[in-house]
Image (cartoon, rainbow, N blue to C red):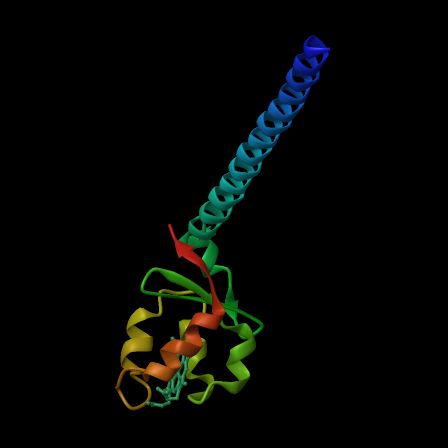
Length: 129
Ligand code: HEM
């Protein structure tokens, strides 16, 4: 009878032990899956689209206007019709427009305001190679 008790207790220990070990394994898997997802998202955040000057130069019209400001590329096509400086922005299409943006030579000869800079961020599409 004593032997039977010992046997049952042993079986319980084995079952509980196996259960605990299996759960630990699951936890490890889940956290490593999470890590992979995190790494992927970090990578895609830094893995921005890259453009060459030649590629930008093909987007040089009112209907398709990319411009470069401080090595960042912006697609401002949809903004042209609401630009407070009117058609002046068209001179920057397809080019490195950093100086134009900073100086507005055909206007007040002053840099764009902070709110213009903030607005610019919503048109960001990538970086110059
Ligand atoms: C790169 C080519 C551009 C040129 C040549 C240009 C030129 C001008 C000019 C002449 C004005 C009229 C006011 C003034 O003379 O001071 C103006 C105003 C303005 N532009 Fe542009 N612009 C350009 C690009 C942009 C872009 C890409 C944005 C934003 C996405 C922008 C946003 C504004 C805003 C918000 C104003 C109102 C004044 C201010 O907040 O500075 N412009 N711009």
